[in-house]
Amino acid sequence: MPVRYGIVCDHCRKFYFVSGDRTASHIHYDRKRGEFKVVCVPPCKNTIHFQRGMIVPYIIPDAAIQRGYAHIDDCSPVTANE
Image (cartoon, rainbow, N blue to C red):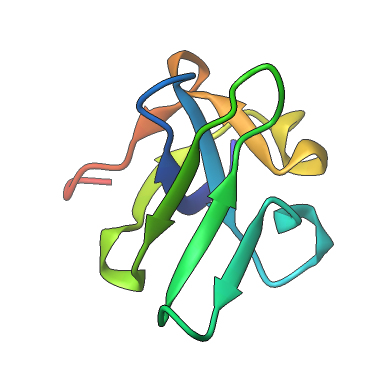
């Protein structure tokens, strides 16, 4: 399973990962605020603002790559030993 860096929504528990390709369509950079913004997928209406230092690595399922997010219960945090 691949490793991706991203941010977790505390409301819906989805892990949105930052990527250089179009699968990260949920994440946008807000130049005025100087930070990133994630608008969660429905039915969650949460908006997350974060900076680059707040992203964390997780091992995610292969199927989640096309969606651009995964449920946090399906992911594993990357530890220093991996």
